[in-house]
Amino acid sequence: MSGKTGRRLWHLVGGSLAPIGAFFISEKTLLITLSAITFAFLVLELIRFLFPKVNDRFFRLFQRVLKKEERSRPIGSSYLLVASVLAFLLFEKDIAIACLLFLAVGDPAAGVIGERLEIRRAFGWGWRGWGWQGAVACLLSCLAVGMVLIQVGLNINLILISVGAAVAAVVALFPWPIDDNIVMPLLCGAVMTLVAVYCG
Image 1: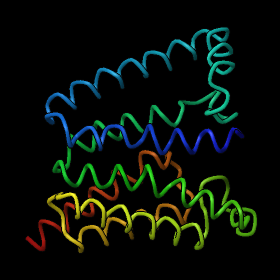
Image 2: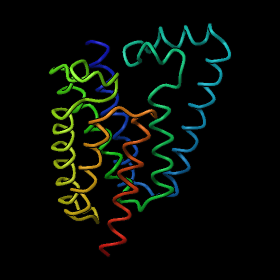
Image 3: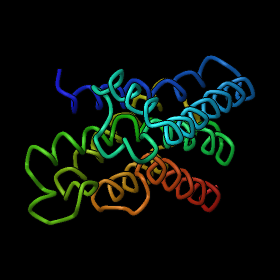
Image 4: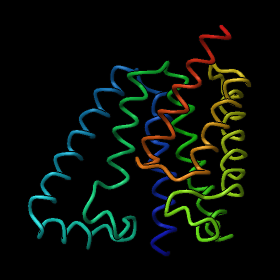
């Protein structure tokens, strides 16, 4: 399994744990657990930045799911954990579940399609933007996730799902100065919340 495949599988599985867990445990328990795990990750990040030998050992252990540039910056999982805590703190539980699953599924889908078509090189958009093909892949995968969430009884409607999926696609389309593990769920959640308030 290539490093990219490993990262995307981890993104899909790891990113789905908190929102799926929210179906089975209370929001309070989820937040306490997520906050503790996030704190542990951030402490580990600080330790590996302070001690190069620890950083080297860390990369040898997890090289299949890490990017080279993460040797000198926080790893994507740390951003994802912070975003998960913020999502459940700031948004209604059902919106938090939806926007975090949009990230877990939509971002890898955009990466697979965008990379295969070499969109990033064609547009010179650095390492995050995936072009319109990647954005369409993100949009469709998020809509599919949304349909499943509606079917399993999430208190969310087609309008909110469509808006959230569209916002996720926009995030996938362009490069961002902040890690998209933060941008996608928080921007989706914020816009979905505003639409829910306005339409409610």
